Structure formats: structure tokens, C-alpha cells
Image 1 (tube, rainbow, N blue to C red):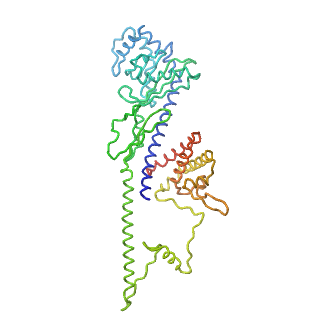
Image 2: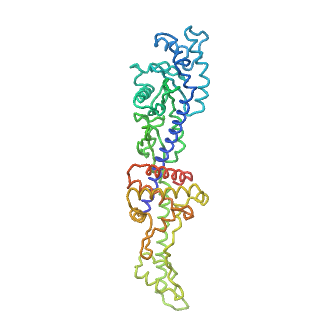
Image 3: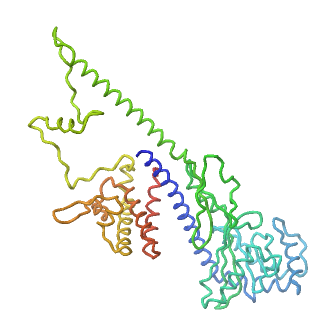
Length: 473
């Protein structure tokens, strides 16, 4: 029994790590999406690539030959180099636009999650790059650039422009791919100025920002690792640094296709629990030995002759039948209670206090956010169960086996479950494990996709986030 509990608790920690990773990555995607939308819609970016005053016409003025223009730009604005003092005679027009916008782009990117920005004109030419990497001045329509991540998102944006009447809703999020000498993600949008599409802007989100976020979720025995679109680990650390470490996944983040693995050393996760199990076994063995020894002393004392003032040792008062005693003997012992004492009864409304393993501390359990999160999960789970299964809370309690069902006169009641549907009636030490397992049971047995299901899954993830704060799960 205890071994099963240890196994469930270990698996629970792995599942929480997976859910937390998905939640945090989704948060980053949503934030990056909103930032890219805000900046792509500004007139500043619109003018920077505009066909009259921006980088696109300035690039066209360098040379009639786009390849020569690109070579001149890369020679003057090389990555990591200071521009030479002598400027080629064909570059002043471009340099003027670059001086006008570059410093502002640096400040813009510094305030975001991104580390680079690319402006791409109608012809697929990268007319500006903040970092001036190998994509700068490249023609994304050429075969040599076709397999580059930037070319892929550019083609996807252009294809979607042919399929929609509202270009402002277009956003392409790439997988985690190697860009230059590092891993990253590209978010590309059309640039719209005065109702016209002026080009495409792509923001690069470094994979290191994602890895740092996931590193904060790691704990002894659990690691989370990002994978690129080919299944290669993004981090330099090996997939498994121990023969005891097992991989779980990969999990896929919806809408992005990002992959991540959970690496778990189960011996580290359940080691402490097994230690307690062994100690309990030793204590139990000691208790059994002590009970047998005491019974032997009592029998020996009773068999000795009562002479010379010797008195037999009295039978010690016991609250339960000793090991090996039959049920009939235990019943007879209860019947011999003094007449003034009444056998205790169990109140039908009695609610067991939280088990030690469920206790999270008085201060945490009294917090309003935690208690409301518990109630929200239970109410959403019951509501989703009723809508999808067309059954009530009695069936939920019986089929899940997580809640007691009482017979109140002529009707069945779920008194304990009912207490978890209101913050005012929630027990002081709520059994959070039963709440989590109820939501997971409903999600497993009512798999129809719907907004209600997504709302329940989000509430469950939020509750698990609360639980993770106390480092108990």
C-alpha cells in the first residue's frame, strides 16, 4: 500500500513538472505574441521599411544589381566589426536611413524578450538586421537561402497573405531551430502601413530565454530539456547524465510545435519516501516484538504459583486486539467494557482531518488564492462532468472512488464533496490531493475538446502551480 503511495507521489511530481513547463512556455509565447503585434503595428516600423523613406528604397539605391548591393552592405556593416571610415559612394542613402532607425531599434529590442529583428521587403530581401548576421542582405527567394529558418517563416507569411482579408491577424511562430551559431525561435508578421503591406518583420527569440525559464522549474531529481525541431537537445548538457535518469516525453506545446523532455531520476524523487517506509517497517517490527514479549511475560506470570506473596502481573489495558488475536476475542474484549462506558460511535457528518501528507502548513492553507483555486477546480470539474457525461455529483463520487456517499434517510448525499464547492465551507485543512485527482479523473473520462475542458485544465494547472510553491509536490 505504502509502495503504491510512493509510486503515485513520484509520478505526480513528474506530471507537475510537465504541466508547469507547458504553462510557462505558453506564457512566454503569449507575451512574445503580444509584444510582436504591438511593435509590428507601430508607424515607426512601418516607416522604417516603407517604400518611400525606409530601408527598402535605400537598399534599391545602392546598386541595380541586388547581389552587389548585398555584398557592399555586408562588407561595410559586417557582424561584430566597426564600419570603416571611408564609405563606398553608393551607401550614403542607406547609411542615412540606418542612422535614423538603428539606435531606436536597439532600444526597442532591449525592452523585449527578443535579441534580433529582421526587416524583409516585398522581394524577399533582408534589408535590415539588428545584429547583422548572415541573414542580413540575403535574398530569401534564392535556392541557397530556401532552407534557412528566416526564409521559411517569410514564405509562410506571404502564403497566408493570399488566404486572408485581414493581414493584421497573421503571425507565424517557427519551431526551435538553429539560427547562425545559436538556437532560437522566429515570430514573423506582415508590416502594414496605411492599409498596405509594406513587407515582413521577424523577431528572434533566443532559446536561452526559454531554457532559463524552464531551469527555474527544475528541482532535485527532475530536469526539463528543450529539443529543436529535429529532436536534438538545445542545451549543451547531455540528455541523461545518469544511468538512473529516465526520459518522459517528448511533450509538444500546442500551436508552436516546440518539444521538451522531462528527465527524472526516480531514485532521487522517491529516495526520501522509501527511507521513511523502511523506518516505519523497523518501528513496526519493533512494536510486534515488544507485543510478543509482553504477552509471553503475562503468560509466564499467570502460570507461576501464587505463593509467598507473589502476585500475577495484570493484563495491560489495550485499545486493539494484539497481533494474532482473533476477531471474536477482540469482540469479547469490547463487550467487557465497564458498564459506565459506552462504545464510541461515528458521526455521519464527521470529516477526517487532513492527513500529514496533505498538510501544507497553516499559513499556506489559509491563503485566499489557494482556497479559491481549490474551489474553482472542483466546481469546474463538476460542471464539465455534468455537461459531458450527463451525470451528477453522486455518480462522480461513486465512479471516481474519491468521495464518500452518505445515505440521508431516503436520499444519497455527498456531504464532504459539497464542502469543496464553496470557499466558505471549505475545510480548514483541505484534501488537495482529492481535488487534483477529481479534476484529472474528469479530464480522462470526459475527453471531448471544448472551451469548458480548456478552462478546467487551466484551473488545474494554476492549482498545481500554487502547490509547487510550497515545495511539497
